[in-house]
Image (cartoon, rainbow, N blue to C red):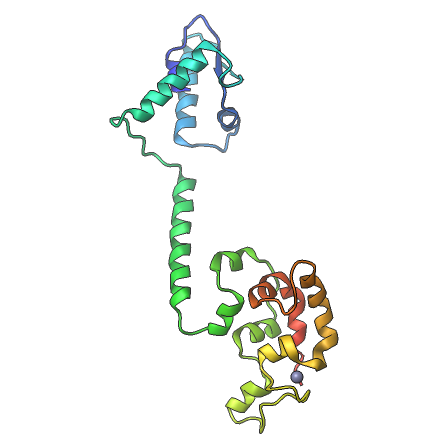
Length: 222
Ligand SMILES: [Zn+2]
């Protein structure tokens, strides 16, 4: 774009580009990125010199002389190691910083020795942040293994036995989620949801991100 504007013959009053993104960016008053602002400034300068500037989209590689010339110059510029453009828009810096902080967070989570149960449900920070659901006390209890299951209470000598009243094993969060036959009817909704794409028992990662809205119902403790 710059080259075309710089080389613009004053007798002409139009500038062609094959970049729709550039045209859209010029029209968007909220786009204040460096290059777009530079184009606007050039336009104002040229208009003060009695040029009427209009930007028009044209098809790329369709034999337009000036467009082909701009392409050629742009390609030459990429091969010229003396030219270095290092201005980033603010949004790009924000994006990069967010990425870095996410990677750091993920590394810390990967190496964390606490929260192992939660990690089984949510191993990936990015996926967890993308998942929207209402956190309820029951759901939090299940995904942190801090619910009042008999197994948990037994560890603290609050209940005499860790076994579930269903007599099918110790009453842990996993038991309630996957095995307890007292919760068969509660399991129907999430099982049905999961079985459209996967088989039950679903992995905890899927339980956490796909059916979190209904899964808390498993935590009806007795
Ligand atoms: Zn049970």
